[in-house]
Length: 200
Image (cartoon, rainbow, N blue to C red; front, side, top):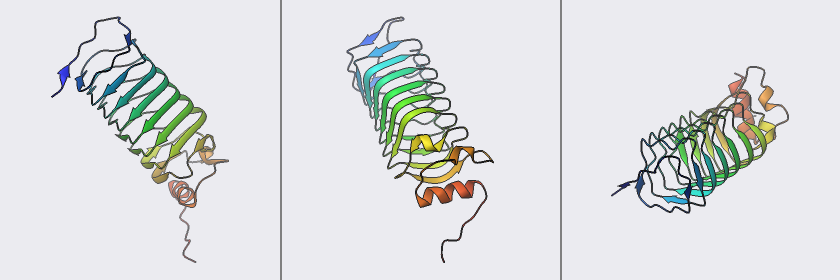
């Protein structure tokens, strides 16, 4: 059973450790969350736009249709979270980790990143376009029909991640200089409508 939790306006959330908390439809925009851990919580349809999240973790938490647009996150961890329809549009993510998360229609477009890690995650029909930054790593992830238009693949570590459909620009500028596995290279060529026969 989830307990409804309402946070007073304009209050910094610090050293807060809720379990099975229901924050759905809540407005946490422009709020600061620090040194906190959320376990088995629900944030569905909540807004965390322009929020600041520092040294905090979320495990087994539902972020369905949550807006985290323009948020600033440092040392945040998302472990086994549901990110369906979740938007991080134009956020700054520094030392942020996503572990064993699943997302459909998740938006990371325009993110500025440093030490951003995705590990054992699956994203479908998600938007990774126009991401800038350094040390962006995808470990053992599955990316199905994801958009990477405007994101330089050479800035990403994708060696043990599988593409099942990828969207890039017609001139393939995103793929220039990228180090890709054979399967991912074939996926990039397929996105350009180039098909390679490797059976010979």
